[in-house]
Length: 168
Image (tube, rainbow, N blue to C red):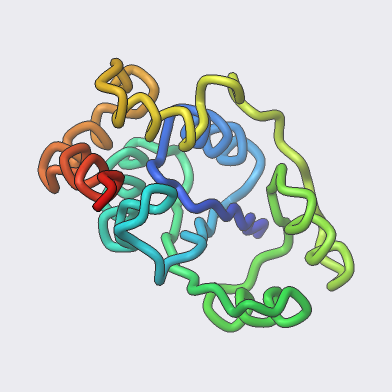
């Protein structure tokens, strides 16, 4: 049984994440998806709560051809302890999938197999780009799965982001 681990902030979950997870599902028997910085919300860089991101992921991945588990992960602020923290919060896994150099280094040092999946249209499929488009009133819905559009509308996420971004 091969179980992969994929981590991201998913602020918001977008089509790039979806494409990577669909490719991972072709090689892994199960996937653990870690929602990083789970304790942070209501900021311009992290407007959505961990629970809202769980909704985005689980609704978007309903048709995934591979069982998956979504685990919120709070930051520990000490990189040397982060892998142990992840291992304590997640089911066992044998491969980490990441494009993040720090995450790759930390898991490599811990002796875990690390693979770097090809990113999907990285310049446009980025949480930073999507949040900026939301703030600027530009179309963003085409960059995320339909289920994410539904969640963001349900929670009034664009309005929240704009309110948070206002200056006093």
